[in-house]
Length: 188
Image (cartoon, rainbow, N blue to C red; front, side, top):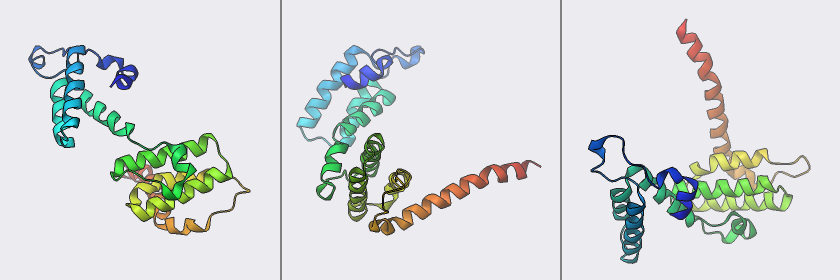
């Protein structure tokens, strides 16, 4: 919660402008303190994510509550460097949105320090992700990883496993390129 409020200080205290909304949940230091306590007790009691969501949104409001829950989810993500260090043993999140964030973070880590070893490790991780989860979350990370290839790096043999994801990306690009032309033709 402290990280969220450091990044988004305007969420620390936001009194609703309309008096009718002041009777509902809104973020203030007092409501954030209640939120921390509710999260702690709810988590200790083994409450479901749905219950925790209702507790949080009921104290600080829907928008700030959703942001806090997203931040809490991201705290549990594996570190990109750990995933690159041992991609075959990687434990990726089950939820698709969190899996996508973890894979995107790995690609960003490779982009920030591009070496052949890191690039190969990222491909091994993508293959692991393909074996253990839904392929749709791989479209963006795989496409971006392809673009990071240096001329002297051989294309890994396992890239053929991603043909479906890469073809989907190419079709989406072609469709996006046609939209402006179609929109202009429709205005005439």
